Structure formats: structure tokens, C-alpha cells
Length: 375
Image 1 (spheres, rainbow, N blue to C red):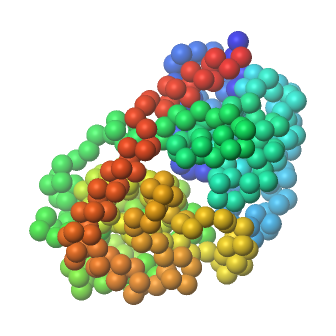
Image 2: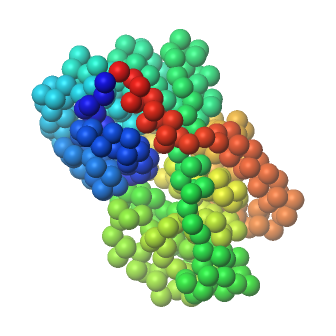
Image 3: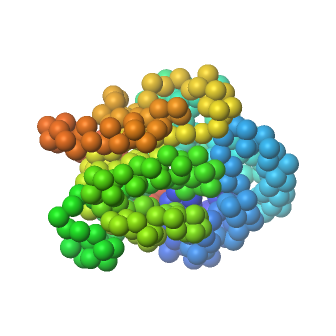
């Protein structure tokens, strides 16, 4: 019988996914004690927080090294609580650098360990597979190719579908006319979505480049531009764009932006999958510090870094990495696709195939049932 559950996440997107699972678990069993590391969404859903994810929002190897003392402190806090409560289930959600260290220290205090949104061992860190096999009882994967990967390592996994399929499918949306009127866009013009990132470190690297792109999109190419602002980011950072003609800051229900966009300029990450689900052609970009990039490129063993291209098994949308992330390159790739109807339509068809690969199940209910039946 499951009575006590510890959940540990470290990312805003994982906070959203886990919050839905918490809500479903408590609807089925209201007396569950659910504690751990999470964000605002999980806390609203019923998590008893030990630490907020804001304290762990480090990106890149260099930033992690700089904050090792903070990570160690959080690890000790979580370990102490797990040792005291001895949960029936420990649920790890993504965040492998922290979670794989934690599980080695606390597995003996938990009846079962479930890893939801497994570490991307297929991209780097295949050596971690031994640790997964030793300390994790069940792995719940959200991409079909991950199941194939784990089978080659003799590790059992369950494909539960991508939670975004469910989330996006249940959202309510404005009509194009309503959305354009709300944000003072012109109906006769194309709408370009710009997703600069959800962390200050990312935005600091991306904004100088995107500023030139946004100005040219809005003033010279005469596009509408919607800038997606993460709730975790102070909107003041983007105030420099608020006075530009044809530009609007989108702070709520950013899925409405994607639903009505003709093209997207997207920072690599979860948002590329969201964009694929709406079958919006895109250019993916990512820029990090020189040191992070040069360390990371020797560790990663995949050809593409955009998740959309990884799921597709080929490069269906352009990717710009590090020194390639320039205003000229972003604008050229955008115009190349928008000015070629055949290419544009081909990308949309490929994105529909990516969406099909992400599953068509209720991920939330499937995961919560697995959790409740684990003991």
C-alpha cells in the first residue's frame, strides 16, 4: 500500500508535469503524504515542499560547479527527510545530475524508485546506465526511441507517452481573430513566435541576438512577433520590446501563441516539442558559455541537439548552435522556409509524424496508476 511519496524535480516543465500527477494521485487517494522538491505548480497541487526548484535552476557544467555547495546542502536536506519518513515510493523526474546522486544515497530508505522522464543517456552519460539498473525499479519514458535504447542496456522501461500531448489537447484556445485582437496584431500579417528561454542564464546569452532579429522581423519584414515570456522570468527584461510596432509580450497561455503562429524561433528544449505538436515550422537555436559548449561537445554523442529532429530521426528543421546563433543566420533560415511553400508544407507534414510518435494516451493517469500499484 502506498501512503508516503517523495517527488524530486528540478525543471519548470517537469514541475508542470509532476503537478498533474500529484493532482491525480490525491484525487484517487486524498490521504497521501506527498513531499519533495518542486515548484509553484506542484505546491498548488498538494506537494509539501522541502526545497523550491528556484534554488536549483543552474544550467551548464560551469554553473553547476560554481554552486556545488548549494547542491550539497539540498541533497542533505532531501536525504534527511527521506531517511526520516522512509517513503513507499521515490519518484525522480528528469534532473539527472541531482537525482542520480540522490538515489544512490537514499534507495535503501525507499520501497521503490520510479524514474519518470528518464535521463537522456542516449545523448550523453551512457555510463550512468549501470546506476539506473542498480537503483531504479521502473523507468517511465516519454519518447518511443528511449524504450529501444534501454532495451539494449537490458533495462526494463515503459513508454507512457509525452505529457504535452495530453496538456495541449485539453487546453482551451482563442480563435485567431480573438488572439490577434487581444495582442494588437494585424490579421493580414504573419505571426512569428519567439521563445528565448526560461532561465536568466539562457536569456542573457540569447537576447542580444534576438533583439536584432525581433526588430527586423517587426519593422522591416513587417511580421507580427509574439515573445513568449516564462512565468519564472521578470517581464522587465523584455520591456525594451514592448514599444515596438507589431510586437507583443505573451505572458499567459503561451500555447495560444503557438496555435496561431506561422513560424517559430525556438530555444532548444521542451518548447520545440510544444511547437511540433502545433505543427509550426521553426528554427531551433542555442547558445551557452564558451566553456560549457567546449566541455559539452566532447561528451554528447548525437548529431542533432533539437529534440524534434532527434524524435524524427533526421534533421527536419534547421538548428543553429553557439557561433551559428547570429541575427543573419536566424533571419535567413526563417525567410528560406517562409518563402518556399513546398519546403514549408513538407516541414509541417514531418512535424505531424513527430506528434504521432509522442503517443496518444493519458500520460497522467497512466503514471499515477503505475505509482499507486507499485507497492
